Image (cartoon, rainbow, N blue to C red):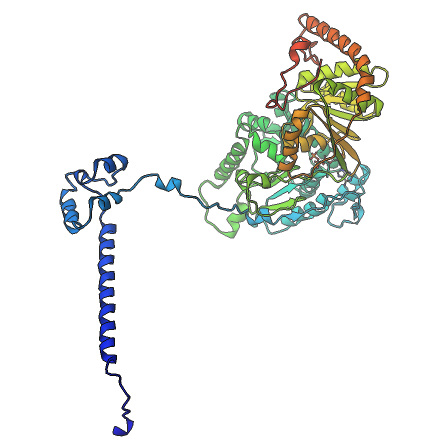
Length: 623
Ligand SMILES: Nc1ncnc2c1ncn2[C@@H]1O[C@H](COP(=O)(O)OP(=O)(O)OP(=O)(O)O)[C@@H](O)[C@H]1O
């Protein structure tokens, strides 16, 4: 063993150093243990302190936490005071918990992250000039639809149609137990969204046996419902499908007679396959129409979804879903056993299809639709956003030119007259912010531009048939200018409108997008001009920035235009005032029917609302 022993040299002081080092370490460890013990006692015992131990000032400033009463706490408190008798009174006071103190702490900003389906949309092209999807070549399109499209002069499908229609058809090719993905489509105005849902619905229902309500299309207003119902009727010719419009334009009982029938053999039976309706009327039918059943509903389309979302009428979606649920329960009796056979039998929720040019990508808003594994088709670039403004991202048609004009309130009619008469703008839709203003402007322009213009009013004050006649005359070029309110702005498809003038600026970005979208439709060129007062320019530019739209160019009207037109304007305004006074006086003697179309109920000078910086939306016609 000695062979393996190595006698190392040892410094005599080395042992002493080691011992010293060990003792200091041990001391430190002991100190740490003591500190931890103290900290542990502090944590375990709630910071309830006998109030007499605390300085008066500290007690009044702080709130004592704990549920026990003073007496109940006594033994514990004695223990604490014994164990902590080394602490000073100031240290004890620190143990009070100040409620709400965390409110003053700086909070870290949480970045909002879109759900995957919203941040990864399927992108749609906005280019309507270079369309290559020939209707005749599409093998997936039913021959009847092809011939109907060609009869309407449609040879190519627009990008939104060629992308979304095959997707919807594919979803319904899957076995019955698989539920199709719901879809949201956000595409510019005039890009052909209507046919995007009309064609696949007709194709998927064309071979269904028996007449049942299988598709429900919900729109925000009567005009739009009528327009979409007409498109359905047009494209379902040469098929057995029946389409009904339920919009409240006729009394409820007349609509009821159209959609259901009672038979001795089968009880209530449906007379229609596709219903196009307004939300309010739909609820009325669900509640009051015997035999109205959505048991076979396959499609639920919501056009102008963001508008419907903003004004959920009569909780219609709740009523639809509840109705389907009740039908389901009636059929099943009780909750059925989950097996393949029952899955096939079970009534599936309808396939939801949402459309809009200004569809919000706000997940909180979209959540209320209860979409199933949705897919978003969008022309806008999407991504995660950090603030609420970033979710408003709207695109306008590529063929649309946008401008604005700045002038004083008294020059606004002169700017409009200059554009219409001197610049020879034809097929113009002009928007005001109020029905009264639309009427006065119509009267003024008809007097002032008597030799050059035919102007008509198109507002909610007119009945439906009058509005239809006016639109027909406009398309036939018998009327050059339509003057209306925002009731006209959404979805209305007036063919060949070349110009849009916002006589009063729009209230928000969505209204702007829908107004200017009445022109530049279906790949045709259009121009939109917004007339602004100097104090409205800032707001208007902010509005464009919020919608993430690029800055638009200004048109400057030379001063000599105003000088030249002011004389004729003065005499026209005088005549307008006289005519409006006559209307007001005659109104009192007219029957309610005869009053239709006359919307001026006050004297002309009273109609002018005060102009202020805050009052951006005011109508500012200087008459
Ligand atoms: N493939 C096509 N080829 C030519 N014209 C088409 C085609 N598809 C639709 N159109 C026409 O384009 C016009 C606009 O279509 P539609 O009303 O469906 O637009 P939209 O996207 O719903 O617009 P909005 O958002 O304003 O409601 C209609 O007159 C329609 O007939």
